[in-house]
Image 1: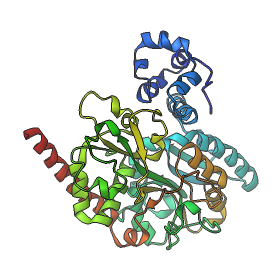
Image 2: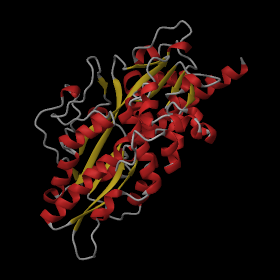
Image 3: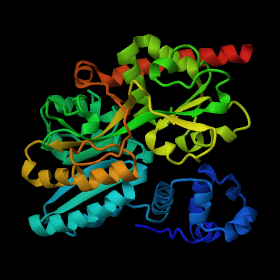
Image 4: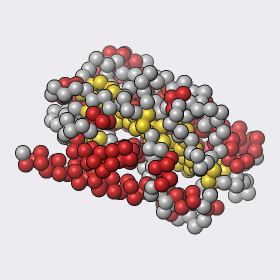
Length: 417
């Protein structure tokens, strides 16, 4: 749902939707934290004009405002409109997380699809699809309380390598042949050519990717060249100079696993040494305005680089050796293919792929989607051979231990200097 009229003043928007104040403050309008500024400057300028002045992408900014409002006002998931009204009607169940920037537009499309599905198939879709920012703990509790495969939801959707690759949880069901990949795209998206993201075992259905890229503060390089690759970032020249998305577990764990698979323990050790601080991406894009300890480089989801003000010191860099990807995927129960295939096809469709790619900047794997990526935007993928031959939960734990050890040592060295 679109709550925002871009021609309204900032004051009108923040008065009507106080939950948007934090978005304004974090995304280029720090003075809007004060009511006097909202009532003064905020009354004089429309949102459209303010974004144009700061050269901020209006479509992405408005999507963030809408998401904040929806989370606050609705609380509940829009997707619950398909829930059956009595205990007699059969249903398809779906649980999972959707990326915050695209959750609302996807759920709006999903509601329309659910109504059509119910009319055509005579059953509802019971769906609980929360924002990714909520985290996977509630899904873990749901899984841990299930006593059999039959008691689990029919479809999961999520991102990252944590819960759904854990051999003690979903992983053990994977080994029992409980899930199947129902996507049957013809060909591959050109952006991912040669990466082999399709699961050769036919279990996971990857629909999109969350790329990790660099945001460089050119004023903090201190004579160092702009890092153009992960290899350069880990070269030893950026000690205590990098902000990392430690709180974004899906992306950070993908970074840990991928770098360890490429560079071994030494790569993770160096990642710990370069860390200056952990920031949320919304803080990262304005890190040039911090008073102290400003990072020279921040690692963040590609989406957030588009909210950076043009003409400033912040420069987005797509790593030449590939943006590390965290997969957005589905798991579908085996044995219910006829009922689940239309739902999987919806989430794997060109329409949803374009929402992911164009509104969220999460490149889609659908072959028909134009991801609008420039030339020279490769990806770095962990790879199915590594995934299937390693216990990823254990690998994450070991990688975190290595990272924490070296990052703590680097901090202690800095304090004693």
